[in-house]
Structure formats: C-alpha cells, structure tokens
Amino acid sequence: MVISALYVHADAALFIDGRKVSGTIVEAGKDLIEIRFDTLPADGMRMLQVQNPNSYLSNEFIFYVETPDEAIAR
Image 1: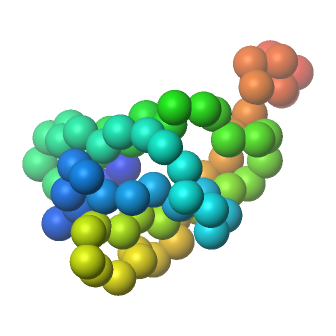
Image 2: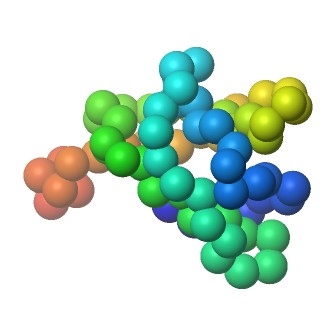
C-alpha cells in the first residue's frame, strides 16, 4: 500500500494491531512511502503503526483488508 508519511526510515518496524510484522518500506515519491507486508494480514479493519529505530510509535493508521472474493461480491 502507498501512504502519505513523513520521516519514516526504511528500517522502521511495522506493527499491525499492536503486533510486530515483517515487511518492507520504500520511498514512493514526495512524502509517500510504499509498505509491503511479507504476509497479508487477516481480512477486516486493521491498525498500522510504524516505529523508527530508537523512537516512538506513530499514530495509528486504519486500513481495511479484503480478499478478491469479497471485492467481487460488492
């Protein structure tokens, strides 16, 4: 996913619903980053936070995960 973000390092930790997950962060343009999770989170509403090394957790970013079957059903 591509989101607007400031001051997020490429080696920042990713947290979904308070649990650390693996993934990558790359710059995607001015004030944009692309986040790719190694494993897609479970369907439904999720909360993402990032944490730069030796820093605080970010505010929560709400996102929604749906399978292709759910998207077609709409």
